[in-house]
Amino acid sequence: SLTKGFTAVLAAVEIASGRLAWDRRVGEALPGFEVADPWVTRELQLDDLLTHRTGWQPEIDLLWTIGLDRDEILARMPEVEQRDRFRAGYSYLNVPYLVAGEAIAHGTGLSYTALLRERVLAPLGMTATRVCGTEVNAVANRITPHSDFDGVVRPVAIENGDAVAPAAGLHSTAADMARWLRFHLGDGSLEGKRLLTREQLAELHEPQTLMPRGRYFRELYPSSHFQAYARGWVVQDYTGRAVVWNTGGLFGSACSIALVPEERLGVIVLTNGPRISLPESIVFRALDSWLENSPRDWSAERLAASRAGRARAAEATRVQQARRDPAAEARLTIGGYAGSYRAPLLGPIEVRTESGVLRVTWGKLTGKAEHWRNEAFLIIWDNPFAGTNVMTFGFDADQRPVRIVIEDLGAFERVPDGSATR
Image 1 (cartoon, helix red, strand yellow):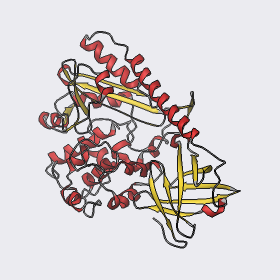
Image 2: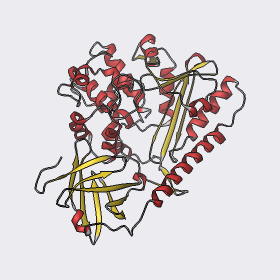
Image 3: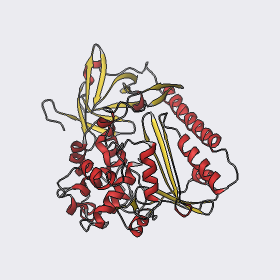
Image 4: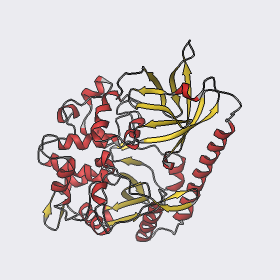
């Protein structure tokens, strides 16, 4: 997610050239773009995408998780509905940055990836930075990500964020990211190459959308009064200083970055370990040291919070298991549940039998479905990161399955045999 800061700089560079504006309507910058609400379609601006105030339903971020590519995700946008009121508050998502990247690049004759290289990475001398996972796999000297499987840390493949590259596509090095820090702590130029004026650079770090200050925030940062999203960055006060920072990662890697502009201090932590908050712990430990704050065991505090989160997840799994009752028989044989089902945004799900086992395919996700109780089945996805979902079948008056409701995903209606699905 540190990529979001790069996309925001690219937008600022294009705005500085006079080609774009923060308040440019997305429908004008990207002709044909629309979402389900006509008013939002008409009024949506570039800055709404970059500052997380669209209010769109969070399920859109599942589209790249299940393996849809950029064009397939964009084709689904007319189905995106509002979960919250437009511009009413902070709603963090990745897909709005995909849309922003497309809007920024449209009309330049270049892809987002090529435009970012030409207008940002090359001028900053970030020659080792790669914009997509396919490029990284061609590099011999690269990390091996590692993730946690039931307490055992194992190597995993590099996750490909290409479908939402403007939100999560960059792969970089410590040396290149040091150049990125120097740029943001400077006057809009680096080593004589100017991208922005000092004022245009500072505008990227200005708070735009207030973030909720829940109990966890208050416990971690008792001296802080606010936290907000800028353009690609989180901004908050911390022990009397303005801190501009962010965190991110893909499966098997995690990172965190922070700037204290008035101190001309920048910190970047890159790890090839599980998605835990170790990078943030190191970042804030470094800030405390520089600012001469009282010593604080950030690692212990973050570890305790991580363990509490795992305990909650384990309890949810225990509750889910307690609901299982294989003795409550299904009304049909396994083959009777097979068919195609579809939701407007989330698309088709295929349910089929394979060697006497019910199998489910959703995009590139596959899994087996074990009988749970009555008409409910537990989907155990083959990708362990995807976890499990309870799938419940609904029937018509003739006792034919006509829909499935998947826990946390919603309803999928049966598609008549022979009908096309998208």
